[in-house]
Image (cartoon, rainbow, N blue to C red):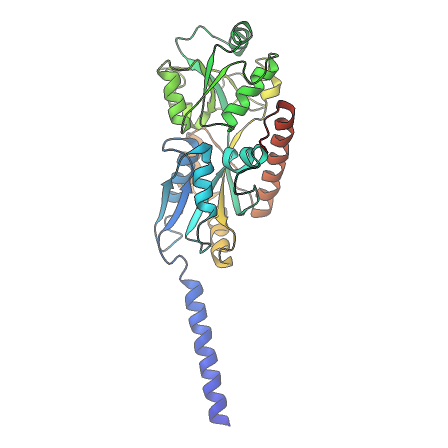
Length: 327
C-alpha cells in the first residue's frame, strides 16, 4: 500500500510539473497583433511601437499584421474568428471598437466581444487643409461649406470612423446634414492625408499621429484646429475647436487599445496586462508614442472596458441624432 501511494504521489507531482511547464510555455509561437487598418496610420504606428517596446517581455517575436478594409471591420472580424490561444491579439481603435459597433448593428462582433487588455493612448484629431488652401481658419472652412452645400470633399479612413464622425459634426454645426460635404473614404489616415496633400480632397479631420510630419515649418498641411480641450504643448499655435468657434467637436478623439480573443488563457491575459503596465515607464514606448502626437494613457482592463462602454453610448446617441444607425 505504501509503495502504491508513493507511485501515485510521484505521478501527481509529475503531472504538476508538466502543468507548470505548459503554463510557462506562453507564447508557444510568434504573437500576431492584428491591426485592422493600413500601414502608416495611427493604429499601425501604435501597434508597431508597442511590439518593439515589449520585445524583451516574451520569448517569441511579436509581429504586427495589417488587415485593412471596411473601416477596420475586416481585420476585427478576422480576429473575432481567431483561435483563443493568446497567439492572436487585436488593436481596438475608436472606429472598429466603438463607433461601428455603436452605429452598425449588422456586423458579426459587438463592442464587448473581446478581452480588454488595456487602453494604450489617445489621439487628438486636427482639422487640416493643404497649406495652399484659401481657408486660413476653421471658420473660413465652415463658411465655405455652408455657402457650397454638397460641393467640398473631405477624407476619412473609411466609413463611420472618427474622422468621418468629426466631419459630420462640423457639418451639423453649420446647419447642414451629413450630405453637406462629400465623404471620400481611404484605407488609412496616411492615405487620407496624402489625398489632402495631393489636392484630391478639400479638408480632413485626421489623427495628429498621421499628420504631424506635415505640420509646422516645411510641412504642406495647415492645421485649422485640434479637438482637445486645451492646446497641445508641442503645437501651441494650433487653436482648439472651442477657440475656433466649434465646441461641438471638442474631445472627439481617436484612441488605441489592445484586445485579446475571448477565451484566451488567463496566463496570457496576465502576461499582457503586466507588460502594458511596464511600458508606462519604458522610453521605447513613451517617446515614440508622444512623438507621433498621441497622449500615453495605459488603463487597466476594467478601466478600459468602462472607457469603451462610455464611448459606445456616446456614439449611439450621436447616431440617433444624425440618423446614422444601421439596423
